[in-house]
Image 1 (cartoon, rainbow, N blue to C red):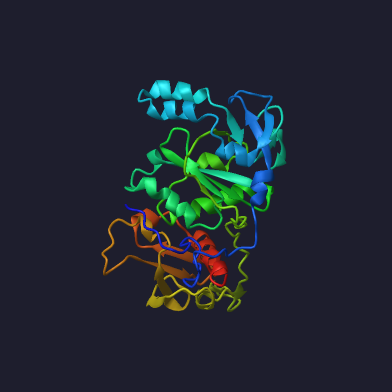
Image 2 (spheres, one colour):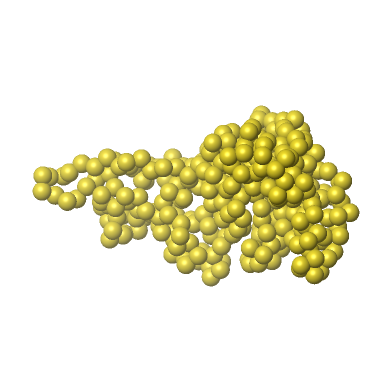
Length: 322
């Protein structure tokens, strides 16, 4: 597949009237320059020192070592050169090691790794930095120390939701068919120092504050004392309208009142068999017992469910009016 980009943050549904030359957020992350994190001499170091996050991300001190690593073709020698590099904890200050229990002060930043080996289906992988520029939460994007991947630094509002934020970010990137390293959900994960002569830096990035919603219990009301048919009180058609989702109705035997709604699949970027004139559709519907369902008629989307679809739609909707 090939990544495509627009002049608007396509991950969030920001209005096309947005001027790319003007800042759209009041939230500032210039505190990235004033945030302290831990620097380790190596992954086994248990006595790290405190350093500035912005300097750790942009330092040129290890440029020669990193260029030697990227030029080395022997895999074992590459691993050895990498092990000699210092590493730092993007997500906070640690004492006595870099396990979760060693976290002393969170930084309210998460680091996301996107490796080329996990994204061999993307033909223009080197253009991934353009994707980072289109997402308003990304504060920093640069080459990994090995030069075969990118890492993104994203501010968030609540360190206690680190893993929940990761889960949502993972789903957002899947909209582009991009796979991110699952190990990044660990708040104690270390980042080897790196070098990029043209990193993407956005000090006006908006702190991330989205999690996959927990579906509230659906209220059910018996139609009769002996009926097994329940009716949920969630109005699916109203929800689609409120969130600006274009749909067409289609009969569905499992749906309440027999009505399903054909919608665009948010993960269409990962579809490989679409015809330009007949893109694959997905369907949302509500069962008679109130259960909400999402189904895409494409094998790549078998794992996506209603909860994920709802989270993506509501995140986009929140940004339509910014």
